[in-house]
Amino acid sequence: MKRRILIVDDDLAVLLTLKAVLELHGFEVDTAASSAEAFARLKSSLYQMVISDLRMETEVAGLEVLRAAHRQAYDPATALLTAYPPSGERLDGKQGDGEHWNGRQGDEKDRDGQNWTREDSDSLLIKPLGTGDLLRQVEALLIRRADKQLRQRGSARKA
Image 1 (cartoon, rainbow, N blue to C red):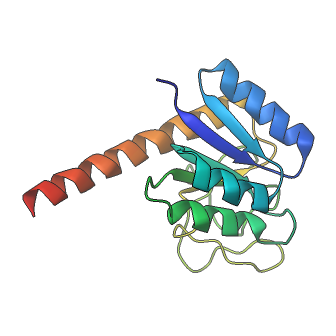
Image 2 (cartoon, rainbow, N blue to C red):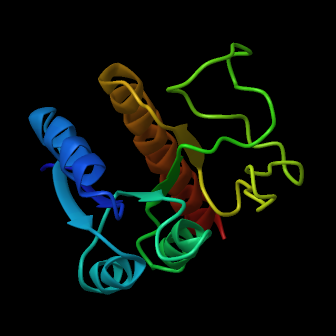
């Protein structure tokens, strides 16, 4: 069974490029070009992961999409996609583009001062994002999501 991902971005070139790359690597991908379209897709389909651009109709439309994803019963992994990284350090300690950033709660701010926390997103993907980086991050997030769900099922059985 193919893993399903929803990609949300108002930039058609980015949307179609990410869709093509992920489909070439075995994922089933749906797209949405606005937060309203994403909300409808989240309610009508099940996704293992949702990737959303931060800035669309508003400066924080992507955060609203990911918060809506977290409210779904199927609890998808989430990643925020942005060209405006927060001040903070990367998980690998290096500088540059194409990786996700460490989510130190409370001090993650984009260039306009908007907060980003791990409560909103499981990861932050910085544009431009290379194919290898994208695939590595998607796989890692899906594995973490599956592990989390297995732990939750185990805890529910014990209770």
